[in-house]
Image (tube, rainbow, N blue to C red; front, side, top):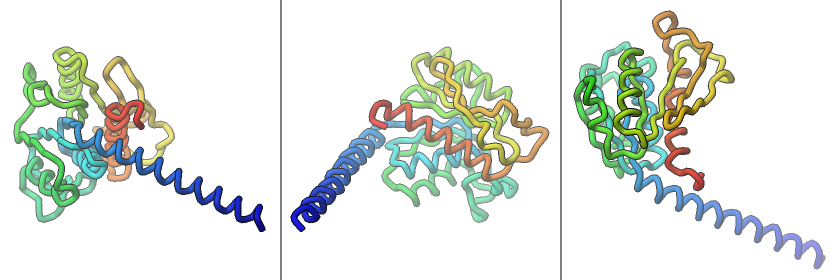
Amino acid sequence: MVRARSHQVYTQNIGKNGKNMNKEKSEKIKKKLSESSVGIAGLGGLGSNAAVALARAGIGRLVLVDFDKIEEKNLTRQYYFLDQIGKSKTIALQDNIKKINPKVTIDSYDEKLEKGSMEKRFRNVDVIIEALDSAETKAAFIEEILTKLPNKPVVAASGVAGYGHSDRITTKRLGNLYMCYDENAPSSDDDVLMAPRVALMANWEANLALEIILGEDK
């Protein structure tokens, strides 16, 4: 009986200590994220879903940049709703995020990124997520950020089209560029863009941003 009781008390204490440790870690992460910021270039399938994931995680500030309006065809993979068709993506996404986490500070810019000044809205964020549609704009943006803001981590994605083959997705790092990548994925010009695959890559980007921010605290 004594042995059984001692074992019971011991295991209960382990559980309590574990809960305390988890709570302490959770509070530490919460504080760190609340003091951190992420900039997102492009608010389509990747950008809108990544922004929502970061808001749910408790990021303190988001900088959102896009010039486009919501179309019905976007709803198959982007974080918008039927009653938002025709609205600016920056405004609509801000509304959606505020319903999820009203504590997030959101700086939104309804403007097109122009070569030569693509970095200007992202100078004061901790991590930048590239979520642009055009391959040409993507490449120009990444090059400009890495050149003008060489110490700023950039998270990008390639290989978003299609479905399945999740096991092929990897993260590649080249200096401050973190690439969520599937080298065997078809081009988005040649294949479909579907919600599961797009959201997977978007959340992968958001997860990489958290990993960069939290570092040893992860």
